[in-house]
Image 1 (cartoon, rainbow, N blue to C red):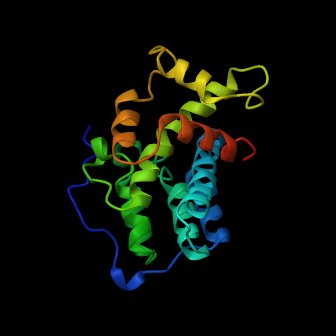
Image 2: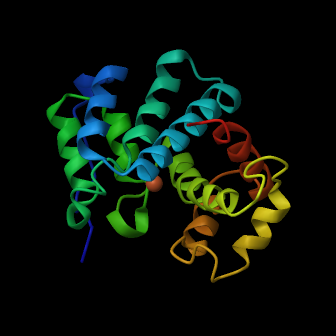
Image 3: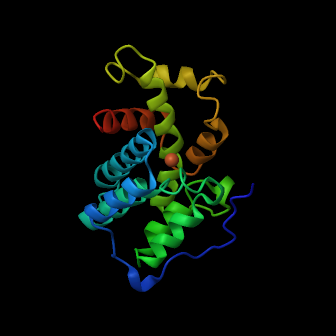
Length: 199
Ligand SMILES: [Fe+2]
């Protein structure tokens, strides 16, 4: 099954700055994503993306909201439309006249699946954060104290155990990190810190 989007431009530049209200995005998630674990994953990626924009990129509120929205919706079509994952949510956001940066970010969150290269820092960060966030959550769930006392070292050890969360592509994580000037340790620590309290 190919998930290649075979497109390189997304959305309409005249929609720059158009985001979605929290009410609308929650409604979409409730309709499209019955799976609570997947919803939590997107909420965690959204929280980490927003925090990264504010703390590391000096982003203003609008920009940080773009990062957050891309995180919140990046897998929105995964449960209902697994064969058309990414294409469906992208077309939905285009129909809703959402900011093209947000749509491009979602389209490039898995370049090896969707064939769209991350361009902006937002694109590159969602690629790096997405897989690691899911991996870290899986690692937290098997710890008796969950996120409490969790550090980058134990996560890196799990990454070197191929049988643990085997569906998480270590190659994608390495590839994503090669595109940004952030160490694996720092990114893991940042993700733990900003997703541990997301419920
Ligand atoms: Fe994801």
